[in-house]
Length: 145
Image (cartoon, rainbow, N blue to C red; front, top):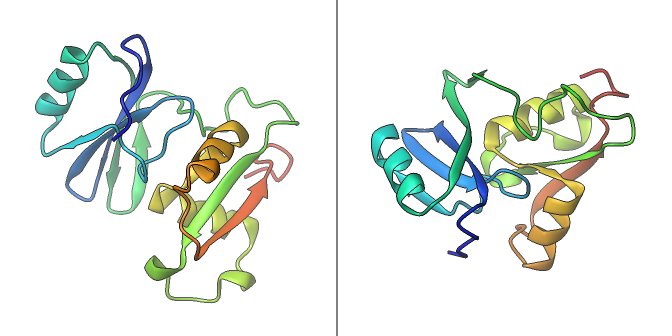
């Protein structure tokens, strides 16, 4: 895994019984800095590495609960801020082309594939995006999602 600078802000996210630590600005659960089996271990490892934990997210029963806004939250977004949402076709049994933008966003967030434009560009150029992933560029403010 790629090491980031010690002053980098990170998110700890709990999903499917695993804690993921990833870059606040450009990361996704698809490219974690590290993973852990408990919050205490993940928090300690992040602090030991010198990371600043700025967000903790937990998914419960496929529903997201948050303590504060994430980089992909709709709060504070400008109309020009577009997000890239991806759906791994291997994890979805359905007609992806027939999904509304709202449904597409919900599934993508559940799978953990949401990027800023800069984050997507970086992941794409690093060949971290699966070839069979379906993506949509969506402005969540304009779409009122």
